[in-house]
Amino acid sequence: METREEILKRINWDYNYSVADQEKILAGKNLQPKIHIYLKLLQSVRWYTLKSILSEAELKEILSSEVVNRVFPAAMKINYDYARRILYE
Image 1 (tube, rainbow, N blue to C red):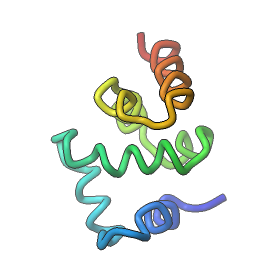
Image 2 (cartoon, rainbow, N blue to C red):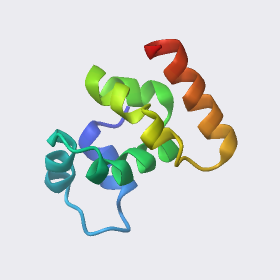
Image 3 (tube, rainbow, N blue to C red):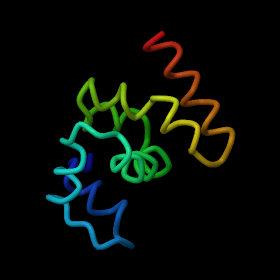
C-alpha cells in the first residue's frame, strides 16, 4: 500500500506543490485551501486507502458537504454523501 507521502506526491503531479506544502495546508484550520487536495484524494484514491492515511478529523472534513458537493462525477458524489450520512449524522 502506498504511503500518505507517495499518494500526495502522485495526486498533485500536475501542480507545483511539494508534499511538505500539502501537509502544511492540510494541517491548517481553514477548509478552503484544503478543498483542492481533498477533491484530488476523493477522485484518485480508494476509500479504504483514504481511511488508512487520513486522521479521523481529516476524514470528517473530507466528507463535509463543502467538499463532497464539488466531486465529479455525480455518482461518486452520491456515494461519498451516503458515506458521510452513515458515519457522521
